[in-house]
Amino acid sequence: MGIISRGFRGRQRDGDGRLPPGQYQVHDFPVLSAGPTPRIERDQWEFTIDTEAEQTHRWSWQELMALPQESPTVDIHCVTKWSKFDTTWQGVSLDVLFEDVETSAEYALVHSYGGYTTNLPLEDLLDGKAWICHRFDGEELEPQHGGPARLVVPHLYFWKSAKWVRGIRLLNEDWPGFWETAGYHHYGDPWREQRYEGD
Amino acid sequence: MIRWRRARLTAAREETPTARTLVFEVADWPGHLAGQHVDVRLTAPDGYTAQRSYSLAAPEGVELTVEGLPDGEVSPYLVDELTVGDEIELRGPVGGWFVWRPAVTTPVLLVAGGSGIVPLMAMIRARRLMGGETPFHLVYSLGEPARRYYAAELDTPEPWLTITWVHTRVAPHRRITKDDLPGPGPDVFVCGPTGFVEAAADLLLDLGHDPGQVRTERFGG
Image (cartoon, rainbow over all chains, first blue to last red; front, side, top):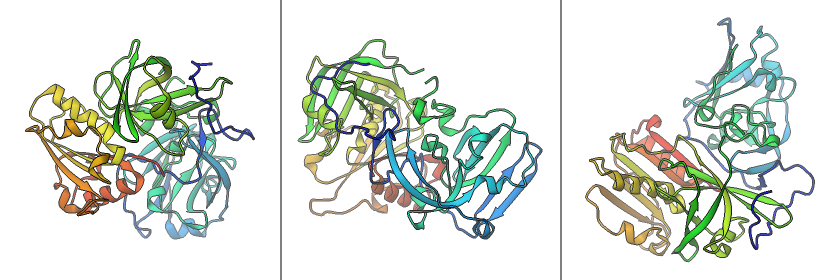
C-alpha cells in the first residue's frame, strides 16, 4: 500500500468487482486520440487482412455489412483510468473475417486511417474476443469514436481497440504500434494494470 | 518501468477561484519534456486508491495545475485539501507524442481550450528557457478573463509569443473561428475538452493543415 493521503476517503467503491485496479466508472463516453478525426467516406472505406505470406483479404463497406452481425455488450477500460460498463455495439466478429485466412502468424499489427497502429497477439482477436464495430448504442458510430468502423477488443485497454480501423497485418514477430512505441505496455491487460512498458 | 515515487508538496498557489498550481519535490525525478504528464495516486486509510493523470505545467520541476471538478474524486482533494508538506504518490513522466522538443525549430501553434492550457504552458515556458528563434502563437479560448491560468505571466509581452484570446462568455462572446488560426506550416498542439478539440482540429484541417502536424490531447467527456 502506498502513502495514506490524509483526509482522502475516495468516492467510487467497486462493489461488484467489475472495475479493474486504478480505474473509475464513467457514464459519458470520453474521446481520446492523438490527432484530428480522419474524414472517411464509406464508399472509399475498405478493410484488409494481410497474411505473413503476403495474401490480402479485402472487404468493402457493403461486403462487411453483408456478413453476419453480432451485438456484444461489454465493459471497456481506457488506460487514462475511465471504465464504462455495458457498452452496446454492433459489428462483425473477427472470427468471421478470419474464416478463410490461412496463417500461422502469432501477432497482429492493426492499422487505421490516419496512420495509427497498435499490436496484439492474434489469439486475442479470435474466439469471440474482438469485433469490427460500426454501431454504438443503437446508432451509427460517430467519427470521433472511430466511425465508420473501429476494432473493439474489450478485454484489453481501449487503445488496442483501434479507431478508424483499416486493416490487420499478420506477423511472425511482435511489432510495437503507436502508443507501444511511445512507452505504453505491449499487451495492456487492465486487470494486471499493464499501462506502461515494464508494468 | 515507471515506478511510483513519493512527492511532497512544497508550494501551492491559486490560479483561479477553482484551480490551483501545485509544486512537488520528488526525489530522483528523471526530468521530462514539455507536454508530458504524470499519474497521481491517492490512498485512503482503508487502502482504497484512486489514480488520475495530470499534465506537467512547467518544463523543470514537478508542477501541476489542477482544476477542481465539483463532482470529482481526486481533483477536489488536490485543490482544497492537500497542504504544503503533505505527501502523495506519482509516477512519470508519461507520454512521448504530445511533446515539444526545443531542438525542433519549426514554428509552433498552440490551441488551448480552458484548462487545456496546462501542457501548452509547459511548452511556452520551455521555449522561454531555451531561447532561440522559434516563433510561438497561442490561441487560448476560455469563458472569461477571470478564468485565465498564468494570467500575469501571459500578460507580460514576449517578442516570440503571439497570443490570441477568445472569450466565450463575455462580450463579444464567441467561439474559436478560422480567423483566429494561422494557415498551414507550424507544428500544432491542441488541448482542451473533447468538443473544443474536435472543433479546433476541424478548423485546422479546413485551413489546409497537414493532419500529421496536428497533435491533440483531449480530456473530459
